[in-house]
Length: 302
Image (cartoon, rainbow, N blue to C red; front, side):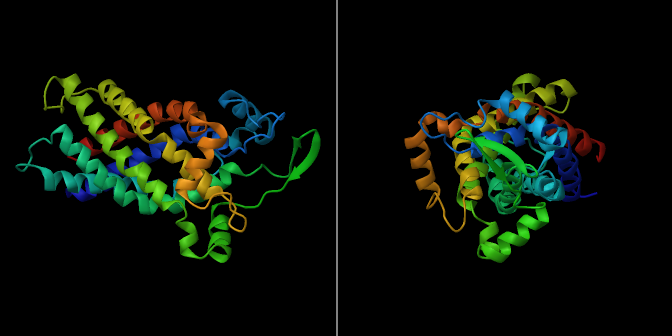
């Protein structure tokens, strides 16, 4: 089996592991990011991550935490296969000699290149996921300023989101709403993640030969690398989420810069870190699972 095929297979397995472990955390993150800023005297819909979990479970059951998983599940194989394959091919280009280990700086470059490639797949997938996660459950009754209001479900599922966007939001261009902030997240984020992952592996191994590292060490390096991803780019993810769920006919934001400015003005720096807790809580175990599954699968393929 060639290197490309091995990366495709290992990336797929790693992606599935990441999704199963991390999706509930991602749902809570998006709910916190997308809740509207309360008017003066009103309370926010969710007071925090724990409150969001409780209200989601009460209104939708455990399945509510996996809402929107259909879209990433359908594409997780392609996403992670592409991510790890492009990174692998960039490693080949960057190596000083065949089989030579890459430096940490070279891993940063390889991760950035992979980030560019996956952004074009991530944008429509994330748009579909965010809209499903942000919408109300069923026909739910919510309280706003003491009055009861009915929140109807707009989308019936991932395919329905895609159909509605293609039909009424400018076709393919509508599915790529948020491409700029997605690139701003994926390029530096993946550069940081793969660079930190390699740096930690080399630190634990005490040198550039990391082939003898055990599963615990790989999970530790992968989990911390995933956390580093979000620390480096989190505000861009908040901007991406609000742009992608913004109303097409009556948009609140004219673009990414406008969204950044309005969030900062209305909510301060904290507004750019809404949902950061769930994102970090998700990232560490999810990426630990992803990198471990990738390394084991890649190693088993020879």
